[in-house]
Amino acid sequence: MRTSDFDFILPEALIAQFPAKERTASRLLKLDKDGAIHDHDFLDLPQFLHPGDLLVLNDTRVIKARLFGHKMSGGNIEVMIERILDQHRALAHVRASRSPKPGSRLRLSDAIDAEVIERQDDLFLLRFDSATPILDLLDSYGALPLPPYITHSADSTDEERYQTVFAQNPGAVAAPTAGLHFDEVMLSTLKSMGIQIAYITLHVGAGTFQPVRVDNIKDHQMHSELYSVPQSTVDLIRQTKQNGGKVTAIGTTALRALESASQSGETQAGSSETSIFITPGYEFKVVDRLFTNFHLPKSTLLMLVSAFAGVENIRAAYQHAIDQRYRFFSYGDAMLIDR
Image (tube, helix red, strand yellow):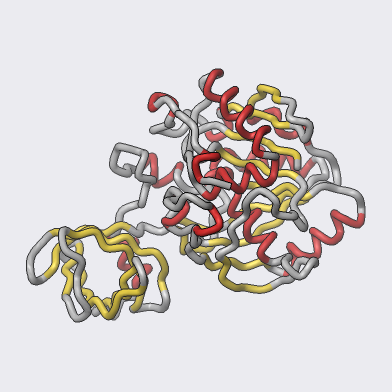
């Protein structure tokens, strides 16, 4: 298939710039397996789930990955940490008028010194001089990395709302946005109905916002991301399947982790890296239902949901969402999709 098959025209006014007043105040578009479309609210979600079903959520935590500064040789830079390798080394995107060379020295936030060790494709390996671990430095001096289509700088509201209520494991540079709709009350309601809750961790990278720039989607190369699936989640998946329940992935990141861990045909516990690229024709191995936000044109995530629901079904659902003025992207409304 061609990248152009996954393009659509979105009015700029439908790109949500701020979260809804309450986490649970979003709308919900339900897309049935036969392509039928239904308009609901997020608070209607429990009526579509049944005792014995399983929800799998991504408990990654967004780090303050953005740093501003300058090269010691001159010139302003912006650093976006992509992955922390250890307490003093990280892979990062570096924006500058001229890319820094190995050996270059960086001064960040007027407080942190770092050295460029080498370039690895479009990322730079940086070594930080401080004895303080990188994660602690980011907490003190970094800024929350809001998506590029959100035009305001991150403030205290974003620091709360661009983070799920169940975030535990720091390492993401973008939020698993489907999880942003859930609050503690909704999670408690679902548990009281007999719906199981399980967690995976996938540290979302900045590549999630990158459009596919090749004509043939088979030529696209995914950035790898770290993920972990605990044995307790594997056990709940097995139990759910045996009892006839459905596994619902809360977000494309949860789906990618589960499918990556199930390539052998059976879900395996453990930690690894994934660069899985799910496109139409992919045979899903574990996920029965997907709860997700609306995604960018020509993006790998739009290709993923098209694989899950069918290309024509997604085209129709997105056009319906545009016509009905749904809010799009990270702070926007949601879909519930039956495979």
